[in-house]
Image (cartoon, rainbow, N blue to C red):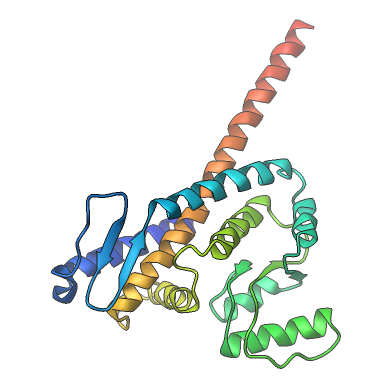
Length: 242
């Protein structure tokens, strides 16, 4: 929940930066139609009915899948591997990823130093050879041991958004989002201080996708806890009748 609140606060700061920026005030408008546009002289971001449809389909499809493995998360990871997803689990994965601003779960393609380090570690641990590459493909990375089901659910949600080409998952948007998130940890620094207008709009999309993944996992957990309580109550009621 702490991370969820952090992202919401970050999103609010973005909106405030837009309202206070004279360069974007007169260039931003909304059309009252099924498609909403945010425009300025540099970029146009379009959210269509088709995008909303994709998001709803992802939610419904993943809800069914995760519920099936709600009590057996490791079997869900095995299922992901069978589907051809690249999944790695190794000791200290969370600490390694944190060193360069990443977190356990789904990783969109990385470039540069991050990719080099991750490829090196994966090469040694899983392929018994050193991999010198400055780019990675999309992958799932988890810490060794039992992985919490909602960590997997959130990662899968982001993965589905990525393969369905939802806005905000391109390399530039993701890197800008990570930079802004890191900046938000410093009280005297504006998270968007070094961002161009293009960067801010791209970051807005990346934030939106992350929020959707977090919201999905929260709603799933609430729904599951309610159904579990209802089942327990039913069992207790029947027990008293016997």
